[in-house]
Image 1 (cartoon, helix red, strand yellow):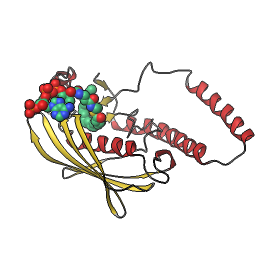
Image 2 (cartoon, rainbow, N blue to C red; image 1 turned 90 degrees about the vertical axis):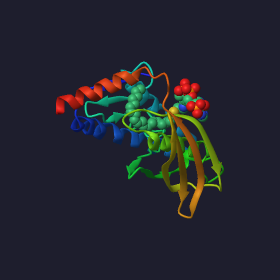
Image 3 (cartoon, protein in one colour; image 1 turned 30 degrees about the horizontal axis):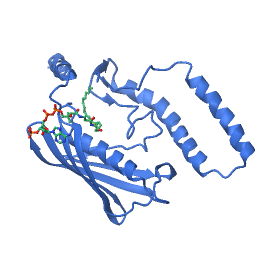
Image 4 (cartoon, rainbow, N blue to C red; image 1 turned 180 degrees about the horizontal axis):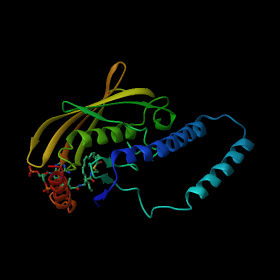
Length: 221
Ligand SMILES: CCCCC/C=C\C/C=C\C/C=C\C/C=C\CCCC(=O)SCCNC(=O)CCNC(=O)[C@H](O)C(C)(C)COP(=O)(O)OP(=O)(O)OC[C@H]1O[C@@H](n2cnc3c(N)ncnc32)[C@H](O)[C@@H]1OP(=O)(O)O
């Protein structure tokens, strides 16, 4: 896993987001429209041709692999390909997690693209969102924790629509952080998760992160 710093400020991050987020939103709309459209077959074929033309346009310049995660000089992360939160990833609902007093929280609307049992959220999507939530709950001091074990208990089906996620740290033991996460609809908790998050023993980027933070703090003092 690489650790990359881009020498840009938060204003430049906002500028880039102002371009890509509406594009990603439009693709999300496209996904939802394809699922729910009732136009005739000729219209579906015509739409496909237009979409293929757009794909060819975007393929004119591409990264080799995934988007990766880079950081600004202020340590703002840019995980824009992330499957749960990525600003460039139309697969992501997207989840926008806020941390207040150690508790992480997110509100998100899960539409037709996240369906499992008819009219309800796919269990894998619930697990994806909870995995991201527990990851961000455990994250501290710019050091990543990986999900070692995620235990998910589905209490009742979650209807498609608005949901809330909430996570909190319940304990630590050396490199391990224990996290409890919940996904709720308006009537209460539908899915709960217990996670064992682990700061990996072998993390080649660790020294690079520590020395970069020290250097930045030095420059500012
Ligand atoms: C790249 C640059 C990044 C810079 C990041 C900077 C800032 C980041 C800030 C914020 C990040 C925000 C959000 C996070 C984003 C996304 C969240 C998504 C979360 C995920 O989606 S992440 C992907 C899925 N995840 C994996 O892909 C893990 C694959 N796996 C491994 O990478 C290793 O397997 C690892 C690291 C898990 C352990 O490796 P290790 O070598 O460090 O472990 P070791 O053997 O030393 O064990 C130490 C103690 O943990 C116990 N232990 C070991 N394994 C365990 C397990 N699986 N479950 C429960 N306990 C376990 C042992 O029993 C021992 O316990 P004890 O000490 O009590 O004996």
